[in-house]
View: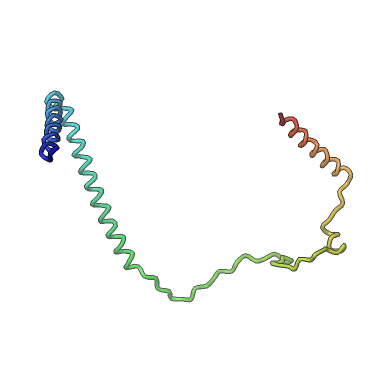
Length: 133
């Protein structure tokens, strides 16, 4: 196939499409005018949008270059929240606590608390067993 043959094929196809479009326009003149007007309106809106976008970008770059920060006084770091009394930021950990250190933090559970914990564990186990196939 030659370049001129391909060109002629494309030309024939476009002429067929052009004839079909012209026939449709002749049959539906009002609808064709409305569609053409809407397409023209959309193109105008796109041109306006492109024009305003490019002009706003130029303004932004111009404004960004003109604003310079001039510091008249030395910057001060604000005070942070105060730490509560007896608050320790870090401490040396010991291998084992003495009995005096353990006493304020550890309480021996009562029989009632032990039974309640045992019962809640039994309930969880029963739920798991019921869910198993």
